[in-house]
Length: 324
Image 1: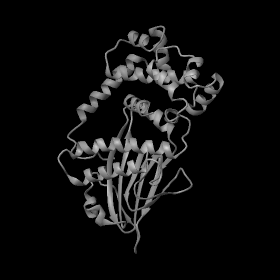
Image 2: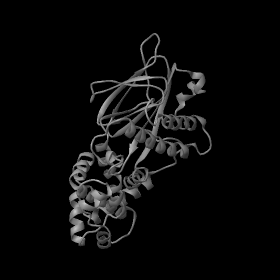
Image 3: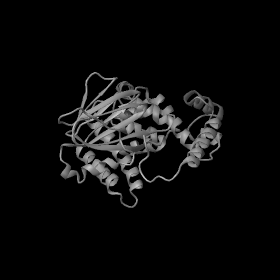
Image 4: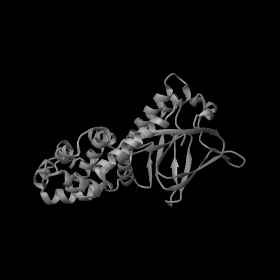
């Protein structure tokens, strides 16, 4: 699963972006509106999080993370003591964290929260947001929790240490934190049908590996079911139930992901790309691509490269985590 998950992450350009956080003592409340995918990580203390898309609140303890699949609004409350709760807004530069240093001395009365979002290309938006529920709670006592707490601790050290290269380190730890969150959630919870659940399915993994390794081949149910050591009928039913689509439909989507990357990052001619991905002609490939993506391959290539050039032009120095 790890190799296939890494491959998908690279294809859809998944990035976990740490955007801010806060440390506060006493009663507090924080509110936000989420449009895409946002994660809220509880480093220390505890909180109660409610959204307008779920009935039950989520109780977050130390080392726990919740991923919110927007659009939604949420309210997080925590702390104890007299007086009204203090309204807190995450700091992009983590300046409030100084109040909780060292973390061990701060104790449980300090709530320390790190937040961020998941940056995706359009294909990734479709894949990951379909694969996750509206609220995904990764618990601190479940499978994978130790690795998750370790990632949170290392991230906390970087955002508070002001060490040389900390901006680069925070970006890398944001990536690793997202990976650990997804790993832990796959182990702890039942996933809806989709590619993430498919990659986690032990029985189907050999067949998925064949599809990924040779997408140009005209795979049939007999070969794929044999790789999974299942009958054709059982394999087809299980694949559809887990992935949400039949095997051939999944293969076609996988080809389109590969095509997007090739058009975005390389100079391969459309006709050569069509043959490389198993299409009988450039016309057949272009028709399939437009049906899946909504525009022709050449128009997609031009738009993707113009967008990438615009990002490079507008990107400035990054002394710390980018604001939300």
